[in-house]
Length: 400
Image (cartoon, rainbow, N blue to C red):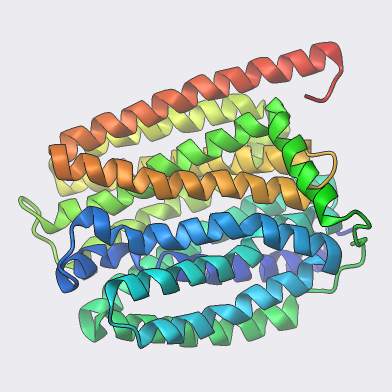
């Protein structure tokens, strides 16, 4: 078993994190370009959101099939198959000019991305010691945020100079080079045991996870958290292009640097989980996110930046704890459980985009603020409910 602070840990953790970096670069490449697509294809902001939502929905719907496959053939083959598809779909997108054709290819990109996202944490759960797993998950999610930052900045800046097609092709080249490094560094699995159960039995395990309140409530928390977090950034991009800010897309995309706050807090979340209660950490992270939303509502550039920094820090803190909660509490079918968490996570992000961008189109930033506050309130209620469930499980010495 791979222990914390060993050479094997550093090699495996870096390879897994860098693969995650590539995945999230590709997933969020289009997010800062949504205003460009709205203008180029003459569609509304809500309709342009399909270019982001199709990839997150494609990812969410494909996570469980990839996870089930990994229980049979192993985590490593699934992760590498997933990564190899990314530059192929990227190059195909470069040739498409019709809006709905591009939406379809972004859906295929989501399906390709899902293979890696579905099983990377399960690989860690198989190979790493419990202490190393908690820290590795925090580092992995930090890489998620860094990949999201880089992909969004890449899309915003390159689209200003080369157009969206140039940004897509450049990302395909970067991804192809990065895949070689991951292939070289990621060690073979030594503790994986192929599942002897049928796909039907594994599908029943999905039902078992959903029927477990201590898992399912954490999954819903992750989805609501992401619905608020990622789409506040999407709507802010539209906001910064209009008065009183009037910024170009390349400059507006710099707001995604605020994700760096999440890179820091996701790493701190592992220490919090080992020292305090994860439930109290999720509560803290959600309150911090809510504070950031209120700060960002002020009509100045500095308030928007500070607010988004706070939102990113709080949301990633909550996400890391909820994600780690599911991976630790699932007594069997860990790949299925973590994939099911991500299904809720990305479905939440997809639906939240239509919700908050719809608020923007019909009520401006004031309506967006109210919509975001309502999502944070829902999550605070769910987190307290999760705490009640945990206490009940401890009291009765059962697994719910």
